[in-house]
Image 1 (cartoon, rainbow, N blue to C red):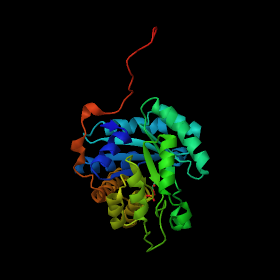
Image 2 (tube, rainbow, N blue to C red):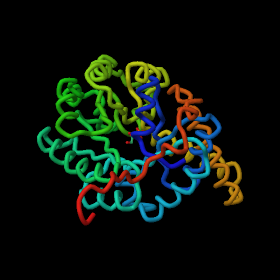
Image 3 (cartoon, rainbow, N blue to C red):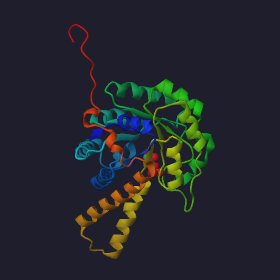
Length: 304
Ligand code: 13P
């Protein structure tokens, strides 16, 4: 069932669980991730980043494939433009059928972040497409940005950002970072920030940089109030490492079989992450009739 993040995450807030948002840039990852959600009867969010699409499969190619595969399972599957930064790109994703959009203007000063985010919300809400914004800034693991406390979300600013922009989901910074952390480094998360933001709002909260954050940290983040856990690097690297190993063992590995086996690895690691969030078995909360779509009100004016 193809749906949007608001439909999925409002249920996650109501029933206090988290949903995995997993990156999928090709058919193998997509099929593996959806199979994991289907088997565990968990709602799922598919991430597709502006940066990824500019280098690989673009929206015109990916959206129809994602919609088709989402339609083949009874579990709700949403698609979100991840880290939309440029207006033209965001509009293209919106028009291509993305069911949800993230605008990441978090590197700008707050006023500029609000203005850019609100512009996207105003567009997307015209067609019932929910929007995720970010306040505070989640940086890069390789630069140890997760330790930069000055970038962490300030709970009072989170509330004013939500009010000023009308976002449907909020990404917060509390100690994680995107990408691969240095060897043996496990981030220290500020669960108190999550709890304080959760105390001032009931909109869904997103944790970016899920990879390598540690299973216990993810469980505790969900307990503290996170509803969307973004995971990309671990999925990519798990499949890459399998490929390296497989080809080392057998350089004549049949290519099609390799793709099928990569898909199985994508399923395996997605199942692991779903298991940390409490979303397994929650698909039954969603009904097929209640999917997203263009919500048009009744005609009211003469000539409409
Ligand atoms: P990781 O690659 O660190 O899992 O981060 C994913 C993410 O937050 C995408 O928005």
